[in-house]
Image (cartoon, rainbow, N blue to C red; front, side, top):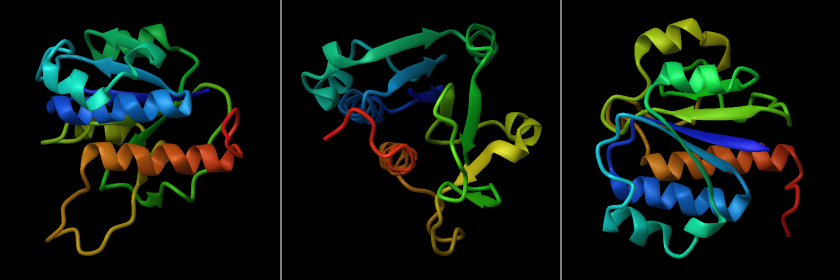
Length: 156
């Protein structure tokens, strides 16, 4: 099973769109606080449409709590600073977690430095001009690459 992890998300519409992607792909969504909004906000609910009851959603107060409650996780950290493209990695079918950082700052450098071997990036042109993609788009790109490698299990 694939797990999508959002570390301190800030924009409710992105989280709602990501929740919809997770529901449609059977992926688990993990939210790590502090978040820049309440999950009950209308913008989150609207973006997720009526998919919320299909979603396996888990909350954590901190990165440390997330790690302690998911000790078997193989975590891939999405960042524009990684050497390997998301499509170069071979993802395990068990305990595969893809983490994305908050919209304004990404994943903290200390976490990335501790996990260089599992950092991934989505290829883009000149990073000086186009710094990053929208968070919900990035999640969709990586999720579908992982599911492609798995041959789209339980999907039609």
